[in-house]
Image (cartoon, rainbow, N blue to C red; front, side, top):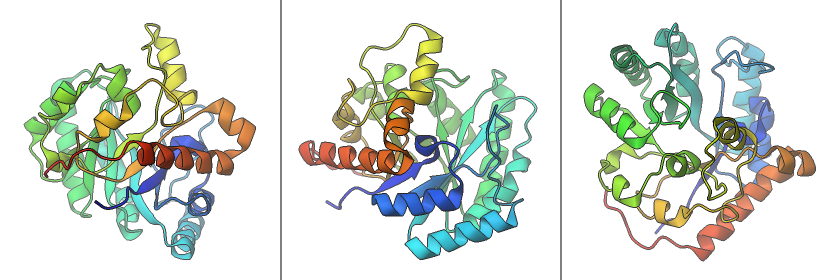
Amino acid sequence: MSQPQFSLAYLTVLNTPPPEMTYMAARAGYDFVSLRPIYMGLPGEPNFSLAKNKALLRDTKTALKDTGLQLLDIELARIADGIDPSQYEPEMEVAAELGGRHVLSSIWTDNKEEAIDKFTKLCDLAAQYELTVELEYVPIASVSNLAGVMDVLNTVNKANAGLMIDIHHFHRAHGTVEDLKKVPKEWFRFLHLCDAPGIIPSDRDEMVRIVREARSYVGEGGIDVASIINSIPQVPYSIELPNKRQSELLGYEEFARRCLVTAKEYFAKHPRQQKVNS
């Protein structure tokens, strides 16, 4: 079985520009980088649009060429009220130009009909650039569990639409290995790797705090990561592991390296127990 491949996700090194993030990922030993060129307008969020900032695009191209890293995915193409998916197309075009593979999406509207319509449009746009769209469920979003994502994917029935499991979100949504057996294997293309305390917070604010700034190194939380990994095909693992205390203590580059080292150590101790046929 081939060795696992790893990508550095944006939230792990929050607010780091794409070129710097690419060099950082390469020095830390990652195989891919997962960028956020889609500006979300969050408080204090820098705008790293590669479609609008030609100098940033040029420097990102140079960084990818210099390091030999590949772009795994871009984020975050939210499906939400007041957002037209067509606004994501310029960043999709750039992602394809950079050799990217996937677009990460999640659904934040309770209007199911609108969500289906917009997600379908998003998939059609991505298909023009030979990109897949991976739908992630988030416990605090409108589509908050595996059943919700499967409903959307079965309804839109697009060949380039898939599922993106986040280890934290899977656990928080009370997911089980049996649930994963119901998922078509071709829907899995990459996942978000992290760990977190085993006790699921009942308080929403505490849930959000852990999601955004207090996830754990793989193997140092309370989630049975190995059982989840063993239940899906081997795919690239994008390490999304925001931890404010550790990153401030170590600095982003050393923190990113430590995230990768602990993940590799965990996989060495917990090798894949079975091959999941795709």
